[in-house]
Image 1: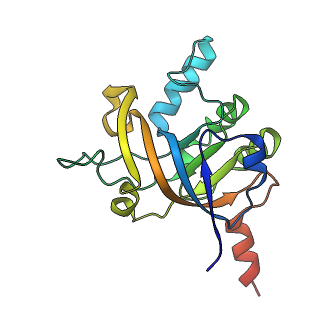
Image 2: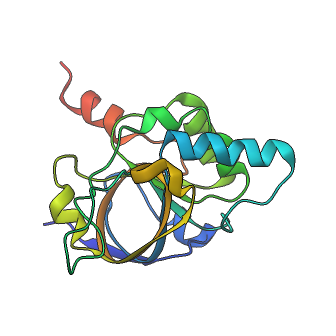
Length: 184
């Protein structure tokens, strides 16, 4: 089995530059959630010159709309959302200092270019494993846009949150490399 790297948030350029496609990671620290409706509002704040509801520098955003928590649990099932829905908003957030995104599915060339230019990574979480992933989430609190329900921005405290590097700061794409590896 390949080595699993452990990383802590917030991320720095040194940490991000040490990550390569196919690396298996366990994240510990604080990550934020947000889907397309929340991203739209974040960019509207940026366009107005207003502050975001959290300091985005060095942070990771997990694209998730978690299920309601059962009694005694901080969060319900928390599987990844398809990432391309955030592609229109991600380059600006990466330029502002966002260092990581977690979701599922491919990213646009504009997002990949921004990751190379500003040093960020895209991390894949396993779709269909939301109940298992939620066990890595120790605390969850809504910090913005409560009216969006499951799409509100949450601050998550995570421990050994499992992901894999899909796009790195060197322009590599695990999905493309995987297809090329087995193409005839």
